[in-house]
Image (cartoon, rainbow, N blue to C red; front, side, top):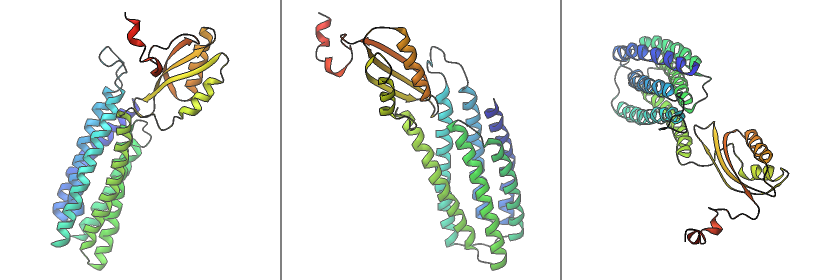
Length: 291
C-alpha cells in the first residue's frame, strides 16, 4: 500500500511543479529549465501510469493471470524507462541546437527556479526512495535524476551569473541527459532479462543443485527451471530422483529452495528406475508409449 501512496504523492508534486516550471522556462529563457519542464511532464505522465500499474499488480491471481498481476508493475518500469530514454535524446538534440544559436537568459530567475526545483524533487524522491519493485525504482530514478538535474542547473546558473557564458546552460543539459540515458538503459536491461525468463541474477544453479543433492535420499536433480516474476520473487520447477518415495523429501527440497529466495516451487519426485517422461534422453522413445 505504501508504494502506491508514495507514487501518488510524487505524481501530484510533479504535475504541479512542471506547470510552474513551464512558466519559469518561458520567463527566464533557459533551455535547461524549459526542456526540464517537458521532461517533468513526461515524468508525471509515466508516474501516473506507474501508479495505476502498481495498484493493478497487487491483485490476487485468478484464472486469467495464474501467476498473479505482479508483472504489471514491471510494465510500469518499461514505460517509465522508455519515456526517460526518449526524453533524454530530445534534450540532447535541443541543447545542441541552442549551442549553435545562443539567446539571452535571465540568470536571477533561473537561480530562484533551480532552488525551488531542488527542494520539490528532493521531497518527491524522499517519498519514493524505499521502493521494492522495479517500477518504484524507476519512479525513484526519475526523482533523483530531477534533483540532480536541478542541482546542476543551480550551479550552472550561478556560474553564468558571474561569467556570462551562455553555453554553460546547454552543456549542463547534455550532461544530465547522458546520465539519465545510462540509468534508463540499465533499468531496461533488467526488465528485458525478466521477460526473456533468464535465470534470476541472485540465483546460482550449480549451488542449488549441490545443496539439493546433499539431502538424504536424493540421487539426482534435473530439469531445474527458475524464473523471476518481478526481479524479487522467484518461481521454480524441478525434478528430483529418489531411492524411495517419501513426502518428507519433497518438504526438504522445498525448504532448501526457500533459502534461495524461491517462494514458489513445483517439485516432481521420480523413483530411480522410473523413466522421466520429458527428459531429453527419452525424447526418441516417447513415440512408442502411445501405440
